[in-house]
Image (cartoon, rainbow, N blue to C red; front, side, top):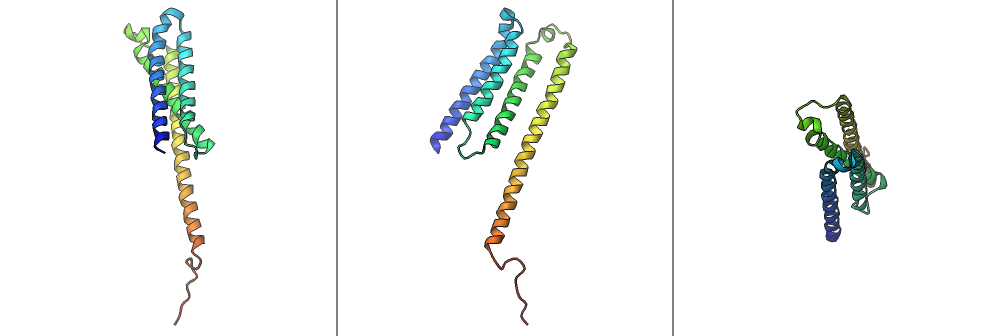
Length: 155
């Protein structure tokens, strides 16, 4: 068990470092190859984060749990990287100008997508826990015959 946790930490550390390098390097490469560096950088960050979380999933975790966790993580990490690109590496921001309308609309729309993904992630997590608690209670009450309304009055 301890080695699996260490392996998970190592994989997530590698994913985080590579995501950070790609996130910081893509805007620098735009001077050489243009905006294609940002598109490729976003795709690399998304794929690396998704598959990194898939690799680190527990073996007893269901496929839907792994997929939900991986999708949520990759959407959030890509959002944070792209937000950093817009906020700190945009030529219009460094020149003191306002952002173009397309950039503003994209950030607003992607913010709503991230909010929906996070909301669904936590909603499903909560529903799964409630369902597990209810199933546990019903199995306990079935295991104790005579405990639910079968007491007899004497007197």
